Structure formats: C-alpha cells, structure tokens
Image (cartoon, rainbow, N blue to C red; front, side, top):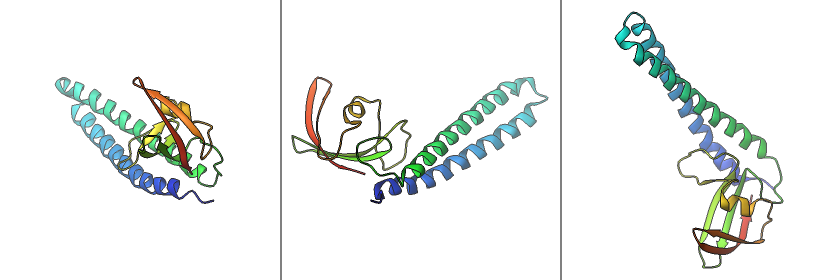
Amino acid sequence: MAREKLAELLRALSDEVQKVKQAADNTKQSADEIARTAAHSPSQSGDSVHSRGQAQITEEYYNKYLSFKKMVESALTQEVKAIKPPCYVELQFSDGRQTAFYLVKDPIAINGFVLVSISSPLGLVLIGKKQNSKFRHTATGKTLNGVIHFIQ
C-alpha cells in the first residue's frame, strides 16, 4: 500500500528544507562578511562571535531538517502494520472528536502539519498499536478513550 500521507509530508518537507538551506547559506554569508569587517575593530569583535554562533545554529537546524527528510524518504516504501515512526495516525475519541497527526521520533516544525513525538504521553500510549485498536490516554487529569481509526 502506498503511503500517500507520508508522501504529502515529504513534499512539504522538501520545500521547507530548501528554505532552511537558503537561510543557513544567507546567515553564513553574513557571518563571513561581519568577520571580515570586524577583523580590525575590537568594538565589532562581539558582533563577529555572535554572527558565527548564529550561522552554526542555522546550519545545525538545516542538518536536522535534512536528516528528518531522509528518514521520511526511507520510510515511504515500508509497510505499516502497527504504529511506529514515522507514521500518519487518525484517532477517533469516544466523545466524538477526531484528530490526525504524524507520529515521529524527533518532531520539527512544518507549517500545516502536526507532528507528535513518540516520547510524548500520547506517543507512548500509541506506539506498537494496530489500526482499529482501542487506547486509553490520561493527560492533565482527564482520561480519553478512543480507537485508532487509520494508520499509514
């Protein structure tokens, strides 16, 4: 079975990776320029240190997104028999509410997508369960019962 929902996430992720890469490149270029201009100015040396630190942070951010993308790509052809990351999940709660999200190991921010960590309380309850399995989740003093409506 094709994993359409994971492919949808991958398409959005590919766009996001390009944006993050561009931001990392721009930040590095800025840091290099500041380092060149601050080389002979003690008053600007703090700016140089700060900009290099920012460039390192954006590069790490890019690497995290790239790693996440590779993980999603490798999972596209894997069959899903039980919930394991990365996995698209739809839940039906006993009070009638429904929710859908992607269960992942280390969530990142992607506009329009809800990513839930496997180490979150809900993730811990769902990991290993199969479609149509019942679950019970207690959070903030409230117990929620439901059924795993769909996984992909």
